[in-house]
Image 1 (tube, rainbow, N blue to C red):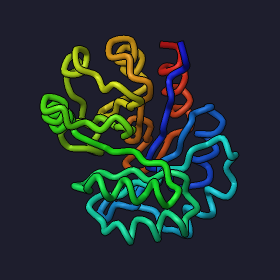
Image 2: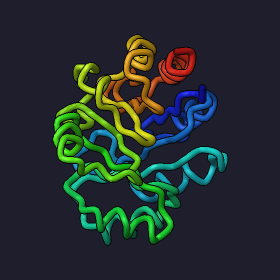
Image 3: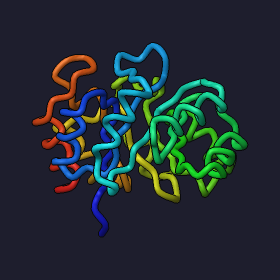
Length: 205
């Protein structure tokens, strides 16, 4: 069995990024969605990303922003991947990939179940399945995914912490997991020890 892919999101400092690298996580998320307590600038992100090993996937997180703005920001920040949380179209994702970016489509559990029932989940989309309020640090009943998990690569998100991620990985069997508030000492401030504990718990499961 392959190891669980781990993404740590909401990184805003070089120290937090170093903790992610030291933990052997696979991806770092930088939030560009207006109003987020974890909002970063292009300059911050470019400086942090420049010091990361090439093995780390660098993900820009956007929500309901014009696709031209997303492309311009991701290019200037030196990111490898774009994660969209809003009502972006399939054409937007296709354009991002045509411009050389990997993509992640973040989707609430309710929207995922609706699309799955209608047979409208695109097989080439990497999904991040989150709670009804994405990015809010709340969880949802994992039983909703046990019988109808996505068929391709996907990540579980929503209220994950070092204390519950192991059990959720064993129950739902996601190829990957995503965490942000669950590894913070205070809102928007990452805790290196919690990051390491989260990655260890996800991988040992």
